[in-house]
Length: 389
Image: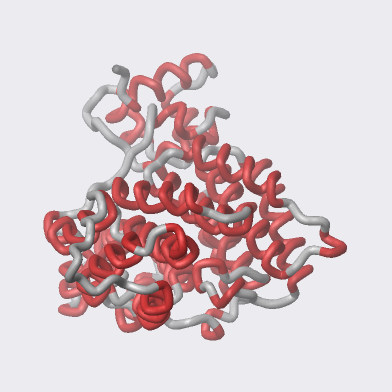
């Protein structure tokens, strides 16, 4: 099986470029390209391969050779063992003396639990989620809607914490039980995010395009829920395309998402579902994310100036991701103090969310490389995000 370096060398030669010419065109250092091609570096960051792929005019995955994902650490695996078991093992048949759960009771329990999901309260969720999942499974067909909602949330949580196998199990089960296209689209939205985090860019793109076509509404009579679902699917199309060196497709999808957001005119959450909140601000957040992917920190910061982030929930996943993009842009432009300040801001609002973000480790590493001396707060943050010192 060829390595990423071998694939870079092969495509570079076909394009008639020297290593120096590829370095100049891509912005990747000559030494990095040499080490890759000579096998001194077995792997490369997806960001590096995206830059090279863009200059070589091939999809990123042509160089990557397949998905690359980071597995969770041992502590994370242990914490979520009971949740994975509740998702992946068959339901236990209740005995005659057991008190059976009711649809109304499970729905009420889920309603009380949802703030833990939106608030990134991972420790609490690792305790309350297993029995809730088992109760929902025991409801049978009459509990379909509440079970689908719980599986959607559980799948999202498993993606968030890089429990990818359990995430796929939860989301596939939710999709199988979906009652209509809108409920299915809500699940596919997270399924696309799972594929993106796994590095399955082509699969994510194809799935998002398929569902965007399937749920595209008539703009003249579209409901807010339809616009939200369609807009999010377009954002997934754009996210997959920009990462796979398909800038034209990424831009087109973002334009259609903007049109959906303009038609909405505000941030809207169907059925108060925080995972599906969509509108003009959400589109700006994703536009900034795309700018970060193509290594345009100047554009990230310009877009950030127009994003009313303080109107979003402090622990909103989209808001936190945006703050990471801004931190990365600051770090890339040498503004290390503001970059670190953004990391501190995220940690203050979402202390259980930040340690699961590999992106945060990359940003902090860049900050530390640019600093002559490290403060005690920086060393403490390195422990938080799991960055080796």
